[in-house]
Image 1 (cartoon, rainbow, N blue to C red):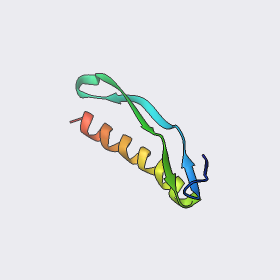
Image 2 (image 1 turned 60 degrees about the vertical axis):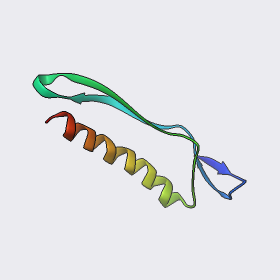
Image 3 (image 1 turned 90 degrees about the vertical axis):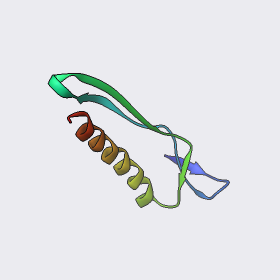
Length: 66
């Protein structure tokens, strides 16, 4: 996290999440999620970005196991 001086907000720089999804019959699939170059008005909204990445990974795993 940094400072976006132009917009007077927090800068989200390079938040990543990656891992393996377990698919049908134990097949492993890699995934990689990235947020870069976003701005947020508060620390709470910055944490929301991290939570969104986590929620997306949950949804990907749910879909991979069907």
